[in-house]
Amino acid sequence: MVRQALDAVCETFDGCETLAYADLSTNLVLATNTTTRETQDSLNTLCAEATLLLDGGGVAVVGTQSGFRIFLRDGDTSTDGLIGLCNLTSDVARLVPAAQRCLAQIASGD
Amino acid sequence: MTDKDTLARKLNALTSQDTFDGKALHLGRSGEPDSLARLLQGIDDTMLERDAVFSVGDISATLRISGKRVHKLVAASDDLNAPTEVLNVPLRSEEPETITRLGEVLKALVEKDGILKIERRLVQGAPEKTGSGVGIQVLSDHWNADPAPRVAAPMDHFLEHVAPHATTLIALTDGEIETVTGDDTAIVQLQEVLGPDWQSFEDEHARFLASDQNINMRILDRFGPNGQSLLFSVIDNRQCIALVGTDAVPQIVAAWASSLR
Image (tube, rainbow over all chains, first blue to last red):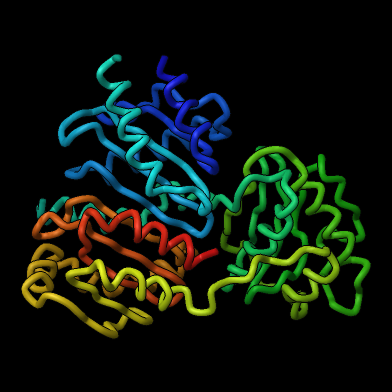
């Protein structure tokens, strides 16, 4: 169910290459979209970055030369997090709320 | 949230080698028509002398680059079948065959299916004389690939789009404060939050340049003194920190994308 939810968001937004659901309290990625090409090492690094940047906030965005990394927390205190990797052509403005809904859905177990 | 220790920790993390950028930078998906152009972009973005490891999965080719000029192919995975005529042979514009052969090796790399990455490493050992190398234009002509045209002054473009959404904006060039605009109270508050890290923030630019992570933007939600988002960005030798409305994050993300395309 989790992977399907992640896949659905990636399929909706061109340029969204990776979406990972993580437990921020243990720095563990619990599930990713099917087509991600990230290695476990990369996912671990991303998860550590998510924990750091979401300390105190619900959204963090990192922009680079080639794209964006998006970090979301489900509420202020939850340990459920979502990590997204997308390129510069992605519609991040629409992707963020869609990813937030996806995270809330996963976290609630619906 | 204005917890000083937390903010200091986050700012320190901006230059950490343990971050995702500290290991390898994604240049985009390989196996696509513009993959070689993306690789050229990686060369064009390399000013300091580095061994740039371009990789797709486990397959890689390492180029010695400085001042946006390629000096030689230092190493290549066996899968790329790099001929001895190009491996560790200095590139010269008057020897087009070597340039073309190097292009073939790199084309073989970017045709692999995966994510094209670049990791810049310090050159090991004593400096060697490898000539002046070959610039982007010559490479582009021989490899039949053009790096995408870029906005002429990306930080100016970015700041122009950020300014309307910022209550406070501080712009720096070469680590020196250039302009401060906006709400004086917020600036004082921000300096208080940054506290003793304010000076290190100003110094941080030099570390960014040295670490090759000199194009970067971070938006941290609700981190300003009044619940605004904190924006921190670096493009080449310019840096800015700003407090922006949380509602403006989508516009700022779009501005970043349009500044770097």
